[in-house]
Image (cartoon, rainbow, N blue to C red; front, side, top):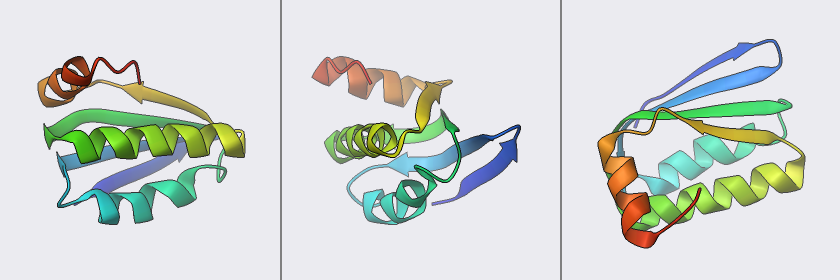
Length: 94
């Protein structure tokens, strides 16, 4: 599960490429959670997510909670159709 990271002006730009599912959330959590608090702002680009299930939705909720606790401003950007559908199904406003 590739995550691309670029930091510019105190903002970490992270791009998830591939699935955001029960099969990948452990690896993604290990990569994403340390980013919360490492910079003042994190932009999480979800445009390359090809599939997302309930475990992916839960991971986004945990990342959001941890960002808030760490004082990191988290922004979700460029949601793929798979992300939009998963969030719509659970009526999430992540």
